[in-house]
Image (cartoon, rainbow, N blue to C red; front, side):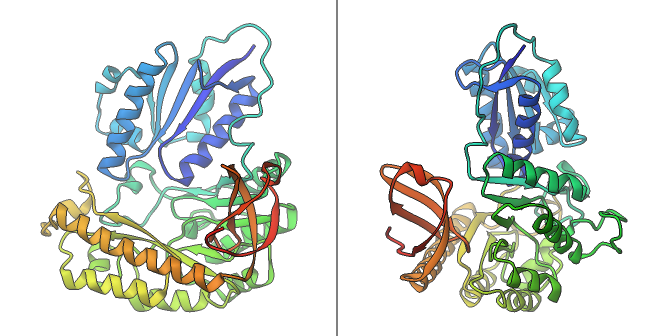
Length: 421
């Protein structure tokens, strides 16, 4: 007996990792992917901004119209927020159930109970994620930081780390599925293990070294060719942690460190627990890793941000020479601390202008790095094939494309880097 499912991800890499694991549970129970007429559609929603929450609602309504016979389930951060608010109007959107982020690993079993199982032979299906040569692995969820712009501690709740053995098992499973690169992801992976007295037998008190020890376990117990860290908060990386990346070519030399602002005054209002000087020390240490590139997230137009504070951020981005900027205009969210402090909001048109200015800076910085690597050899994992072009990412997360055949997708090759292909 089998059933047909369709996963839909609207959020971050952590959401994508959770959907991957849900698929594994569904497939183990006889489920198979079907985009045409699924019995169940699970939408992992995002609520990090007002725009993301609106997109979640619109997507759920659209899917309810598209698949009137399917069970439509809202899952994740926006769904968690709706439950906390005591909303019941989601029933009017045509969906059947709403599940938040608590006890998320047990939810796939609850979802399956909602399906009226079909009789007959289950078709063999490769699944949606196993075709991809990269996979996101969740190692942690939740956050204890309470930044003033963020809802995550309320919808993802407090930090929880996944047992080391489970993480290693997920990496082994990815390897068995033909995956060539895993990305270790979470809400605050720098916090990995801190909430657990003994993440692994024999370990001492958890610290940033705990994440390093997790990496050692993966290196020692699996043969996955490439291991990459997802977004990480600025922390004081130990010498041992840096040494690990310097000595292991399976660890990809790219770090996505969330800056959020280059102004000390804005960082203080955001309740970020570091200064510009702290951040520069972190970057100085990371740059000891050969070939390392560093990307970041920045919020512009945070309440109270002056033109001078914005210019500080622009100049700081240029000083650090990030390889990639993810720029977000501040989004008002009821319930967050920033909305309760009485700081003057920056006009939406001004937020838009500042976003455009900083994105142009990001484009210039990207060009600087692609020009710098032009003609150099880079290791690339080919992920997709489109219109005669192979598309992938270098070891240090530069975009790479090259004319070639589809049969090379999933291969890791050394190529001479040419930004234009």
